[in-house]
Image: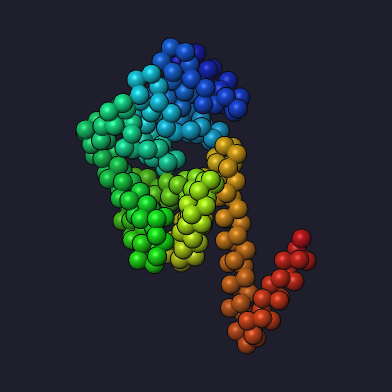
Length: 245
């Protein structure tokens, strides 16, 4: 156990090689951490570790906690965006790998969220946005945080080389983060996810968060200036931003 901890400690301190694979079974530090404990898994993820690298057996890191029935570690990897449909060489469904009801429920809710997000990303019309919000609301927040998974996906797509994916991811983020029922949870989850993604060199989500905050400040100013024109309120917002710089 001490040897494993020492190995992971060294891997965590050397973030540039956090996804390196050991020569015997091609396991990454995340594979090894997910075998050991929730806290070690959390520490490795915070460095920006990729979630879906396969080892020599075609297994990703989330397979181990699924089989072991470790719902907390499974939830953590799910929130980080791990692919739940491609966990081993035959892409066996999670429900066939575990009898743990919490893990099965998280998997079902995650798949429903992924489907809603996929539809909204393909065509971010209001109907699809509302279905995505419903998926968020219907997920069991005591088992896992669906907002973190959504933020992980949005951050990745907002950093994509595909212009349409980038644009639609931004539209979806604005829709969720501007909704009073979801705003606080979405921004809180996004703040945490953006720190991990920045360690991967991806700053897209952090930019979206800052833009959302700026927009909310403008809206607050606009609401206070109900007796003034739109142009005057916008001018005051611009002046305020310039002074703060």
